[in-house]
Amino acid sequence: MKLGLTILLTLAFGATASAETLTPAQIKAIVASPDRTAADLTNDKRRHPEDILAFLAITPGITALDLSAGGGYTTELLARSIGPTGKVYGQSRPRPTAPPPRPANSEGNSNPTVMPAAAPPPAGPPRPSPEALADRSSRLTANNIAAAPIIAVVRPFEDPVPAELADGKLDLVTLMFNYHDLGFLQVDRAAMNKAVFKALKPGGFFVIGDHSGRPGTGISESGTLHRIEESFLRKEVEAAGFRLAAEGDFLRNPDDPRDKNTPDPPMPKDEFFLKFVKP
Image (tube, rainbow, N blue to C red; front, side):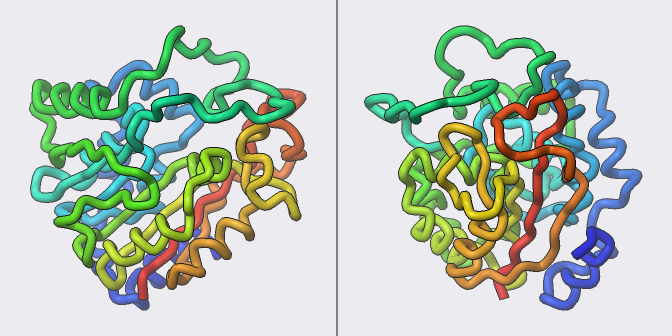
């Protein structure tokens, strides 16, 4: 289903009318904001934030949850888009007491979010997500950006939603390029999807973007190639009660053979976006 049908589907499922969603000009201005960091601008080249925000069809003032928020790239874009009358929660799991087992036969670039020509990741352990989100929130405030407050949430993936939001209080949940990792991390994905379903309002959306795997691979290459089979992901999410509302093809690359973490010769990974709705 093409991106152009998203608005029609949104109306059909009873979500907020398209007239209230961000316009292309508003999205462009958000992405072009001069206070955004150099690191985020570099990430924009791979992430295509204008396309992502258009696909999300955000209405200012909503309440959103960004699962596996990490450094907060997506969380900040949500905050800028939703504005000060809404709220954005950025979830990260509690820090493990011991690292998970390393997958056998790891392959390619260990950081699937960058191409080999990009700058290497910083040395040492990654910065805790709550600290990164707090810095983003402070920077938005210091620059007088009319953004939604960013609230860090440290909860397991199986139960990722704060109690005050857990029963039909969310309008949007996002999970960007990390659903595949839930396999390697041995997360109970069915429990997570059920929790997200319960927390969303009727007509609310669960939007997932990820790296495409080959047919028949399921989630088996999550720890090596950092990929997941699209049909496998869709089946898991729909099992929680969701319906597929739209597909985004703006990061598709049919030339990617999908048999390595970092394609060889170097090229963008084939990536898909799925928008699920709670009926």
